[in-house]
Length: 164
Image (tube, rainbow, N blue to C red; front, side, top):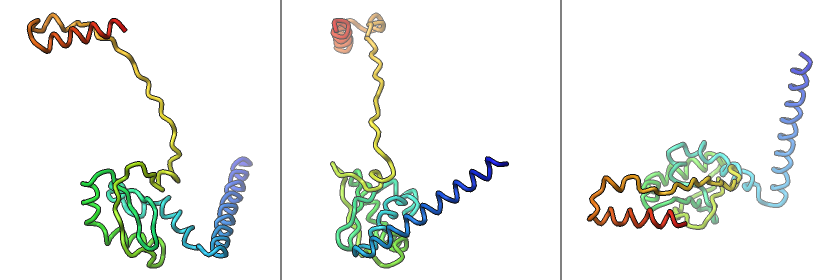
C-alpha cells in the first residue's frame, strides 16, 4: 500500500511540474510575441491525431510561411491525393490552433528536407543492418542448360564470389 501512495504522489508531482512548465512556456512566448509557436509545436507533435491516420500517412508537416502550412509528401501521387483534402487539412489545423491561423496549404515533395513531426517525435536512431554474406556455391548450376546465357552468367557470378 505504501508504494502505491508514493507512486501517486510522484505522478501528481510530475503532472504538476508539466502543467507549470507549460504555463511558463505560454507566458514566455506571449511576452516574446509568439504565442502561437507553442500551439504550432503541439500541432507538429500531434499531427497524426489531428489530421487522421490516412492524411498523416500521405504527408508530414514541414513548417509554415506566414499563414501557409507546408506539408511534405514523398511522391507526386501522394501530393495529388492530398490536394483533394486541402480544405480539410486547413480546417483541422485551424481547429487545433483554436483560431483561423492558416489560410492555405502548400504541398512540397520531400527531398532532403526534415519533417517537423519526425524531428520532434522520433529521435532518429542509426539503424545498423546486419548483412549476412551468403556465398554462391553454384548448387543449381547442374540443373541449367550449360549453353544458356543465364547459366554462363550464374557460373561467372559464383566464380567471382568464391574468389573474394
